[in-house]
Length: 114
Length: 217
Image 1 (cartoon, each protein chain N blue to C red):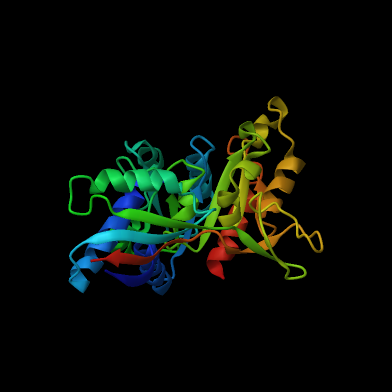
Image 2: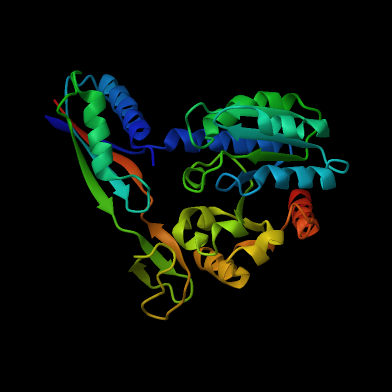
């Protein structure tokens, strides 16, 4: 999507929390990024590195957990991983459509600070 | 060294503003549609045909989103309705913050029934950014290929209504309408699909009737 503007967004949220907590330095940020979130983890890390370079957050790491795309069958409620988004049939009953239960996350889970 | 737990959505701010937009629009009884498609599918033409059919019966306002220029607003100026152009500058989609800025302008208009937000031409990002609308209406045209829904799942999955536009060109494009419908329904079995042509007028009545029914309910 727009990894640069998302990196800036993340930095804004993190700066606010650092100030709120009176923490001095940032070591890493743990993110959950769904595979259907349209955010490329490598690109995001690159952009984050670019915007923190030369600041006191230079060197802070993004630890990204990629969340698989999972759906719940509308027919038999089986839960399964989707490979072709929205066009993976249910492995149990073959139903074409499912409800998305994970895969669109773009969350800041936690930050490691000093 | 210690951990600060946040569990915060990065796009929380857009979601908050979208909900505020939604609340204010609902309070005023304004039915809002977010019109999305790739550039050139016919969004502005659909808005023109819709206004021709409905502007006499319903109070409609339009917000146009484009990277630059106010050409679409100029095209619609003949309808003498509340019109606003949002130039995003670089952003390839409208977001809730941009619409939030227009809320006070909307509230100043005499009683409104419908707000049409014509998003920036883009099949990817608009689907991800809630503006506070009641429904997302997406467009694809017959010259874009009947496999579009398979390649851009998020847009079709997020939409309530799909208009398959430029029907008059179907004989000249290698476009299978039934395949396009089937592909779209695969992405979203609840999608309401209407085939339209802004040139011949085909399907416009059905679209306008659907919009009016949704706005009235």
